[in-house]
Image (tube, rainbow, N blue to C red; front, side, top):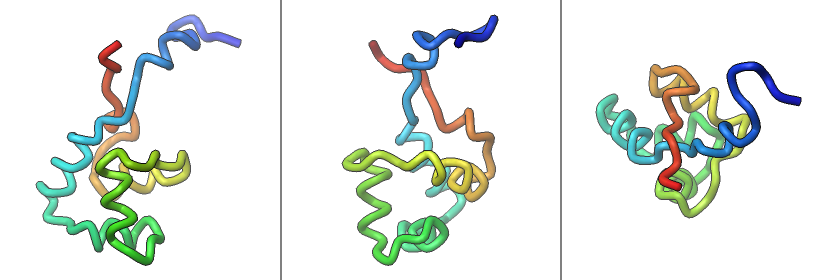
Amino acid sequence: MTSKNMNWLDIQKYELDLDLIREKRLALNYTHKEIAYYLGYKNPCSYYKYENGDYSFKANQLPILAQILNCELSALYKKSKE
């Protein structure tokens, strides 16, 4: 199933922009602990590992993260460096 504007290959060319996520968090003066709390983590180190790229964010976390960071969900993505 494909749409007129985007096919599966186009979708695969995007990845989360972890640098942008970190920059937005810092610009809004949020700590790892605060974001961890909003996402339901008990330990701020858990969130750090997601932001650092050690773990992958779950799909249900991304809309929450976008809301916390005051941005559109699509803004959290960048084109891959393929």
